[in-house]
Image (cartoon, rainbow, N blue to C red; front, side, top):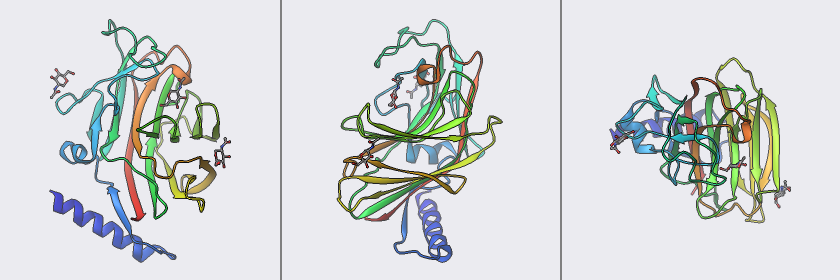
Length: 263
Ligand SMILES: *[C@@H]1O[C@H](CO)[C@@H](O)[C@H](O)[C@H]1NC(C)=O
Ligand SMILES: *[C@@H]1O[C@H](CO)[C@@H](O)[C@H](O)[C@H]1NC(C)=O
Ligand SMILES: *[C@@H]1O[C@H](CO)[C@@H](O)[C@H](O)[C@H]1NC(C)=O
């Protein structure tokens, strides 16, 4: 199993070297595009729920583990996170600030290894996303600090409108957000973020792309050396408005690839 992954990673690296006109460093694959191919591969790169558990600042409680795949599904090389309305959740409110009432069971996953941008490396994070934009749905793909918050940078965040938000938080109130139009037809579109250290060795430069076109560059203050969790989740209400969606909503991700250049 593992050797197949290593071979796939080597093949990807070789492909990058052959096709890139200006390759300086060979890339190391951190999460290969095969990570959603089956549950055993999935569980070697990802873990269920949030790093801290099932609850966060929206009205969905995340549910799933290696034997419960109702809300966190891996099939056809695609991750599906599925939110369904619930009744009588226990406890009735989120255990996380600001303790909103729970109205949904949904899915979240996080990468097992954190990424840390240093002066000698850089990361490229990409994937294809089918994101619901219904009022009250709040899917996201973000990287969040482990030790403290912020750092946070959001490569995908949809707040119930036909926009994706690229965000970088220096503090909870000093935030750069760039909105890009997002189709409401659930078609897949590619998002990519390239993270590199600035020459001051403290700030991180983040170039954000949609469908391989650069959309914005943001800078995260003091992000160098900070371990970041990669999280994919389907929340509800919160920043996306209340009430949440009336029925089931599904958020899909495929071709997720995380590579590192340098050491
Ligand atoms: C998985 O979750 C279900 C409920 O959602 C629970 O009954 C089961 O014990 C859990 N299994 C593991 C391995 O944690
Ligand atoms: C965050 O900090 C970086 C580095 O100092 C700076 O370039 C950027 O403008 C700051 N963001 C905001 C929203 O002020
Ligand atoms: C919820 O927490 C996330 C960080 O995970 C943050 O980006 C967002 O602004 C918070 N939203 C609300 C409404 O509390």
